[in-house]
Length: 25
Image (cartoon, rainbow, N blue to C red; front, side, top):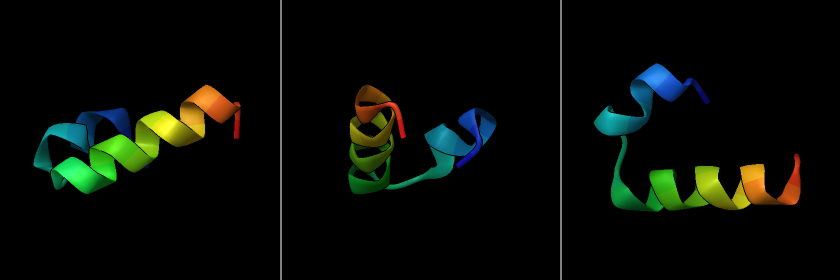
């Protein structure tokens, strides 16, 4: 995912992105 697109994503997609980054994936 691209950080520049985060604001255009749904709350779930933003949550999923944060989970992935917190896991270091």
